[in-house]
Length: 397
Figure 1: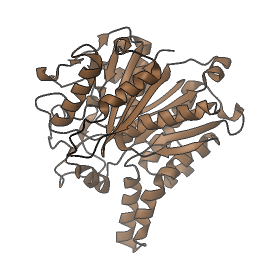
Figure 2 (figure 1 turned 60 degrees about the vertical axis):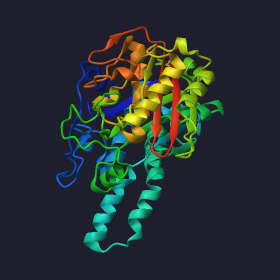
Figure 3 (figure 1 turned 45 degrees about the vertical axis):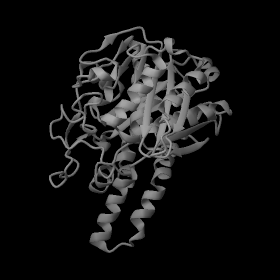
């Protein structure tokens, strides 16, 4: 992984985000993208100070929605950070694999408003949601001349890791460079109602008390927008051009939870074991776990048990910097991967904010302040609504 582009609720750009995380600065606040007064959920993590006119050609702005604009800028920043010129690569050797979950809602919201005001065809809003994902990725591909393999993964919160794994697969099949990850966002009335239907969003109006994973006061999560796109390259190709390497995607595992009521074990523990086996890394070699951090007591319990079963109770530092951004849907996993790469670079574990970890979880949760540590291998965990589980091992090069 040679390039990182971040747009997060607590920072525009990779270094601004990372500085905010290490300082414990949250980007969670009252929704401003629409008036949330009539909704039971009023907090979100919104990307601050983003004006597409500052970053994109004027012709692109009316052709795209807010989420696509965020993704286009993240792509530009990741490619620039990697110091690569896609036009100089062999044709069809560079591609795009991204993740999405709810971004089409905002595009659909606009179509629904047009339907209401102009009498447009009712099918248009639903068609827009169906093909939005491909359009979003296609715009990134066209803008950057990435004419190789292109794909979109839709597996909710797990999508960001699933996309990176698909990117790695394409590199192994002969691609030289894949831009991958996720930038998501559904902070609009239609998207908000859809997210609230999960019954997992916090109704608290206090930004520092709304999202408290592993805390006795946990009662849901805060949703957010943004994420990270990363440049993944074939190792030989990266070496040949003298690229600066943040780290490698050394292992990946994915599972599905069993049918509710089946009595079978949730799939998160197995996903961790698959990722460690894939990376040929033992649990004792892992320096930190970036938790999924659902903020729902029963889901937090499942995750804490999975971590304890694999690594030993309280034997590995655990962190959840997403307490400063909210859960970014498909953008969350790749943002945690970016944080893991930066933790490796700077030899520090970022903190979890506002949380007083309940003792019965038996977790060594890093809270309050960053913890200096020689990080060589990190595990990133994610779960998506509907039973998706994914785990990745990110390792120093």
